[in-house]
Image 1 (cartoon, helix red, strand yellow):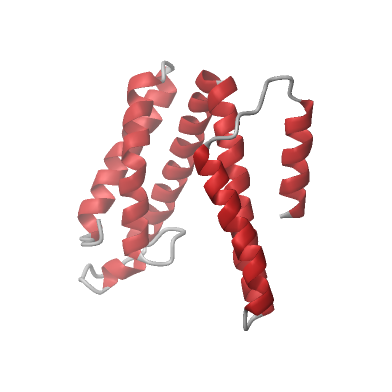
Image 2 (tube, one colour; image 1 turned 60 degrees about the horizontal axis):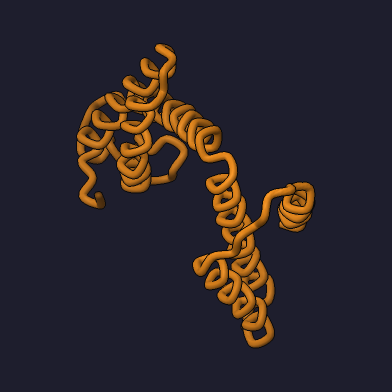
Length: 169
């Protein structure tokens, strides 16, 4: 966490563009300060410190995302969509490998397909939440290989969502 904080501060100090602080960043910062204050009355010091550091990482991610969207929007959007497509494709490949390892297909055996997520419901929710990014990738990306990978990812996403029979989405 400290390395993320130092990296963020160094990165922001090197930039010549003006950094704007908006209302959501202020709210998350106040929440982080409150979580730091709550460490003093917590029953488990290590757990409260861990939770507050997760909030700090989230704050840093929001600040960096805000900065990149304001200053390098096109480049950041393309990079974000491509990285989500790659991660999604790898998750689907992992799920497909788990699907191939099923001997007899039953309602219980479906629970063994969860990719990197620990449970099929979480895997399906992840796939469902990535669908808008994949559709934007289909529309915006220009290279044929990216369109092919994105199209395969959309097909795999929809197939897994239907196959896993998840009610959580």
